Image (cartoon, rainbow, N blue to C red; front, side):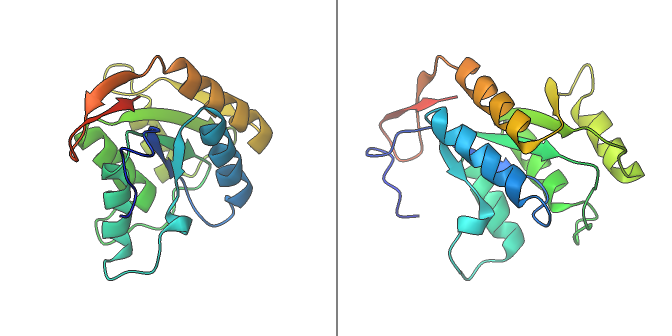
Amino acid sequence: NSRNPMIDARPRVFVSSLMIGYGAVRDAVTGAIERAGCEPVRTEYFPAGTVSPRTACLDGVASCDGIALILGVRYGEPTVAGISATDEEYREAVRLKKHIFVFLEDGDREPRQQEFVRSVEDYVDGHWRKSFRSPEQLEGLVEQALCEGRPMVAAGNAEGGFRERI
């Protein structure tokens, strides 16, 4: 990663969702993240590399301050871990205690996706979420969530020095 945290101190937000069929949604989220003064991190932007897609995605989550978790009606294909890539990214964000912003697309969910959504929005251990019907509505909700997630607090990072964190 050639990013210099001393030059670009914007909080990084990982965009986690299905890839196929979600281009407009991911673009809307990216725009909202940028307008909120944060740096969007999308797997589509990763360069070709020598690590597996799974490792690249989980490293992407680890490199961020938070994730925007976009859950639609489909669960996605289970990976070798037995869960979808989005589910695995979410679990990694939870494990690493990242800030998680959850957005649910309105619609009838596949059974496995409904089970995932139930765990994500669990009353005790889950996350507050917002629902959306269109990429435009989602864009506003993401920007609002990130802007209201501030004021940012300065926190040390692995590279040393300080940076704003969500």
